Amino acid sequence: MRRIGSTMACVASLAIAGLVRAGGGSVESLGVGVEPLRFGTSTVLSGPSAALGTDMVTGINAAFARQNALGGIGGRPLELIALDDGYEPVRTAPNMRTLLEQHDVLAVVGNVGTPTAIAAVPIAVAERTLLFAPFTGAGVVRRDPPQRYVVNFRASYAQEIAAMVDALIDRAGVGPESIALLTQRDGYGDSSHAATMKALRRRGLPEDAVVAHGRYDRNTVDVEAALADLLLFERPPRAIIVVGTYAPTARFIQLARDAQLNAAFLCVSFTGADALSERLDPAERGVVVTQVVPDPSQLDLPLVRDFRADLARVDPAARPSFVALEGYTAGLTLLRALHDAGPTIDREALVDAFERLGTFDVGAGVPLELSPTRHQASDQVWPTRFDGERFVAMDWAELADVLEAAESPP
Image (cartoon, rainbow, N blue to C red):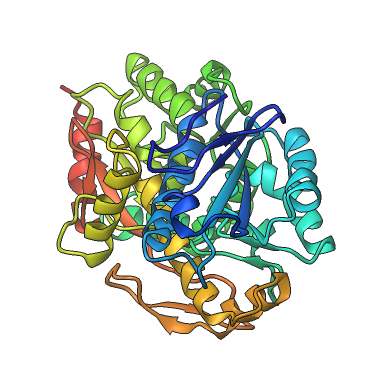
């Protein structure tokens, strides 16, 4: 049984394997017998990508704790029920059924992953229950026009990758034919591969051009074959767009350096920058990760100051990571919708409330917007670079220096 949060969190072990019930603040402090507002998440709490799910849940619980300390919503505490799917879609579907049917959650919040989202979305839509802020930038949760029961917080992978490609070409002088790909062999990798090819062709790559592309299997670190595919390609890449998670990404970068593949590595936000930084060689200077929230050390932002304070109350040992900040920011957005939903909060009223939010601000320094025709709150992408210890905020103008460092290793 995985414990999330601290003694300040309301944590109850249930008889269902892999289930963690957590909410910030004490339910008793809000009144004995008060029925909580229950939310659920099917996420990764075990295996080689567990840090992503753990951090996302921690961030949501920090936002819930903030509201519970103020008396909840209408006197009712907020509670999160987290089920472990191990980042495998075959486990996500039954988890979704458990959350919706047995626990009657008001909404599902912060599910982690694209392959798991492919399993979760049809169930949420069929059951007319909101799936909010899934931790994925894939198109499966971004239909046009939007699906009523799917609302995103974060920018898409297409937006992250377009920013990478434009910066590589305009700021670092890398031609589109010198950009390669490493992707996970599933819907996450496939959607990002399509986004990359679209971005490269928009910037001049011929339609019939072949791009070096290595793939590896989800929930493994078996990246050797993928590296071989890139090493054997006719043109050595100067930059590699990496679409994976932190453990295989770190292994790939180390093996690539050992093989003297001196390229820059540009990773999407789902990689998990904080967990990746713990696995990189401190001498490494050629790695960039795009983020969909600000740097959690940027204390001039009200969002970051509140996040760090609320996180410390929920779990003093928790790291203020990018992923946890995404969960926290999504949690604050959910709280806005709950305040707007009215005295009778049900699944339909909550969706209506999200669509009424319009333009709003949670202290991140950028405006957010949701409406009936816009189900993605943020379009913002922040680049970060590895400084030998952690990923820090950067300007795209610095990308030429990152590339030079990658091509001239110590």
